[in-house]
Image (cartoon, rainbow, N blue to C red; front, side, top):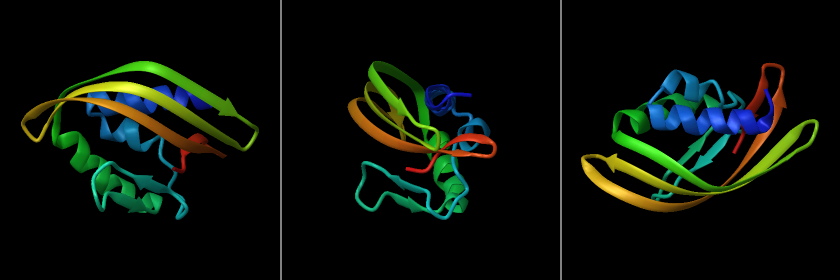
Length: 117
């Protein structure tokens, strides 16, 4: 699977609330880091991703993402992306529309491309 396909799988799983499929895109490496939008929303180490994403998918409803732009650069061992999206989501019971700008980094691992940041 290409880096772009892995990115698509991540966002598809996120909106579907499919934590298992979402975690399949995340590196289990100690070098994994997730930086969220809220103060203190930082996950260090892939072994800590499960708790974060489980909480995320259980606290969201009616989640859709409109991708305005997705740029992906892929090299043999590393890939990075930039995306502009509009998120429509009910978060902890409150409907929200969010204009998102997101960057990320993926590494090529034995099992395929995985998010490392």
